[in-house]
Image (tube, rainbow, N blue to C red; front, top):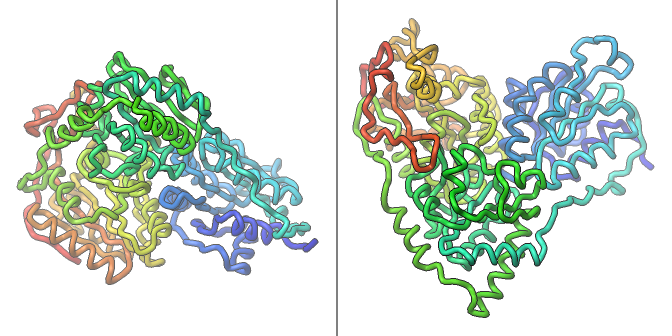
Length: 597
């Protein structure tokens, strides 16, 4: 049996498990693992400027590819910096492996420098967190971590490695190492029959397609099921792209924030709901009395404790989404052949026709720019193969209402956790996972300013993407949520920038910051220049192979449609400022030219 350092065994295990993309920062307590990676050469590493940024990049990579991204860091604060990244990953069922260095086992109880109990800190936001205290446990611990991350509801893990454990020699033969089998529950024939019985008992059934479909790589199967039944499909925020936006049966997103008007209208007419791999998240359902109504619900989820967590369905099925679709499809096709499947053509056609009505206005010519126009121009500028990355704020909500997504893993979004600063580093991970493909990030100015230093990572490692920053110099979503309190309190980011008077009170000069970090930037102040600006950003990204920031100067106050109930969304249709919304200074920029740098 070959003898080697534990870290050399780890690198071989990572390669065999298919986890070969790492994001992180070296440091004293993790340097042994870095030495093994350098010697082995099979794992690519991207050096980040912040460990939290590295964790978001690993998360973005995992979401974009379905593989397991790695986040590496030293002991102490590196591990605590990963916690937000772990939370974002577990909240959305994303497998990601964080590996931390640790002080030697002999001093863990002596308050040694940067020795923190990261295992205990990480447990609430991981599926598996462990400090390995014996070198011989290293191979089995990694095998267990990969099995747990991939089985049932996916999620992240953290393995903490004391430096003496990393350096210890163990007997290990990679040829004798095999990844452990992944366990996922499978829907039975009886469950599938009962599901089809419930679906076909209704006159207006609808499918809610959650992120579990994308995790199961079952998007094509979903489309087959919808076409065989001929019923509408509404993707959740995490399931967006599981059925293309331009498919006749894609009926629009449902929700109280990220939604379409026609999507809500179709759902409210439905009488049977098949939820596949979804969580019934509160931003999707709104008030449960309205959402549930008199409808019958079937809920399919790979995690048993998700069934009944929000409300009790009429039928709950614990199953991998892909396996459940296979079982249901088999029953549907048998009944279709036997001529006993109802004809839902009128219902499907009505849902399709509804997609041509109730659209929100986007074609504004106002200066400063209204955000709706930005998304209109993004749809025109970026093709159907574009991958969008976004996380939180009015920019993300409006983007989800107005952008279009045409394939699985083409909408990358930290849906439940929504951490500010996630978008930029996550986009870098997406670029690593989708080399040569168009990646477009979407941020408000505050999200962009969190972890803005990560732009330098894209410049250093030639990771080109376009980062659209809609800048109203405001915490827009928080400002809107302060309206019931009749206040506008500490939500303005504007100030007179003594170094950039051309920002006219909007504060941070994002163009100069982007340039200083080695990237290119475009500033747009007139809606007529949006198409040209996006085209120029595309050219700059291709030519220089670096991130390109497109800063769009918006009007300071815009209310975006949202509410508490599916049937009571406040549309703000006139988009006029209300007295309580007016900031103390509403100053448009003085120039209206396209500034390309």
